[in-house]
Amino acid sequence: MNFDGFYLVDKQPDWTSFDVCARMRRMFSTKKIGHTGTLDPFATGLLIVAVGKCTRLIPFLVRAKKTYRAKFVFGKSSPTLDPESEISEVSTPKIPTREEFQKVLEQNFTGKISQIPPEFSAIKISGKKCCDLARAGKKVEIPPRATEVFRIKILDFSWPEVSLELEVAAGFYVRALARDLGKNFKTAAICTELRRTFIEKISVADALPLEKCATPIDPKFILTKLSKIEIPAGRTQDFVAGRAFPWSGLEGDKFLVLVGGRTIGLGEICAGKLQPRVVL
Image 1 (cartoon, rainbow, N blue to C red):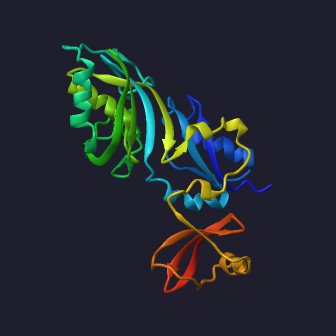
Image 2 (cartoon, rainbow, N blue to C red):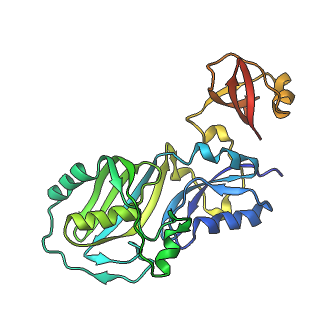
């Protein structure tokens, strides 16, 4: 059986995203596996995994918006900003009201913002991962990065625990939000629960536990932002062989290419022709 395609995995806690891919390599007896966005080990939720030739389509998903539900606990600190390292108590001089907390979210954590990634992250400084440098006890200066919060909402306010739902740009660190919220209220905070519920419009409700992932999903159901074109069956061999053929469209436009409703690859309009870019 051909297992090439996408899989929607509902990741369990204590697994790294790499663990999920390693398990699927064994399940499907293939080396070509990758995911479209890391989840921390303590986090759960939606992980989109590509298998086989579909790994070549991962770049079209890595910048996708993501939605999370997260619980933050204030008055606590840890090096990793989560429960994965030693937790210490930190005093809180003044407990904010829900209204004051909401105001801080609206003023400081909505729209385009600047964020410094956590020290324990895969960001590379001079070719080395920050997390490796942090574990070695080395201090590094991590430059801030531009990111965006499209939507942030209080789900529960039971100080010192606050639960939020947030829709954010790719590359946003929820653990860094915990750190920055703590600083705003002159204390500290960690993220104790994190669940990814959406990637763009793809829901974790459609995901399966890893062990039940057996049927590949056609890319047309995953890459929903890409336009789709259906080509005649007689052009299939041309496309699969990488041969361009006449096709109207705007120069540079990219499409998922379908035959009989099934995705066979990705093409681009070049000089009035459909040029195969990815063949599945």
